[in-house]
Length: 109
Length: 115
Image 1 (tube, rainbow over the protein chains, first blue to last red):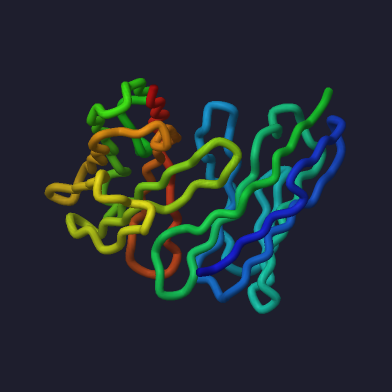
Image 2: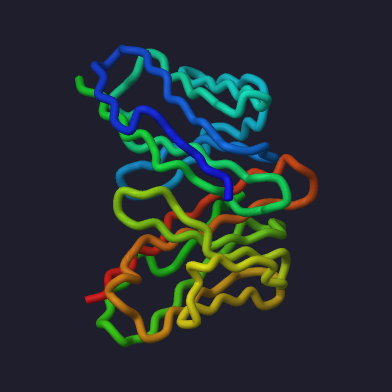
């Protein structure tokens, strides 16, 4: 099945810093979603982005489908951005999401 | 528009007991999914419904697991004869279906602890 790799696995930032999280996937996809998992376990949708670029406030994402990677940018980070960020894809011919192992972000005041 | 809801939020049980979880998807979402997440890992797919039909099951879904979606609305996931290895967060998601822009929305999860 499709493989999803996220980097870095852990990231510590000072409040106000910018960061880039990367997601590589091993095959063509129909769907790519970025999630933020809060400390209570809730997966919060950030972006549905199988290709192209989207922005939502301090967050933006870019997926280059032909090169099989996606990037999540966080600007002016805040302590509330802390948590685990997951990239998940749906490979062609399937419906279920395959998740990466996540990037654990800690933003310090 | 309410989100995906799951009940209970937490369940503690003894090994060998049966447990049942419920998921209510976003209204009018045709597709419903169950995932399992263990500590430090990303969620893993268990099973998927299109309306009331169970169309795909993961190899993770052993014979002790059964899922239903009667009438294509809410879904239940039952685990029989629980084992300590079943301890995990069980997540439900739904999506509207139809077309390629099929965003999945997740519920808050049910955290299962098997003693």
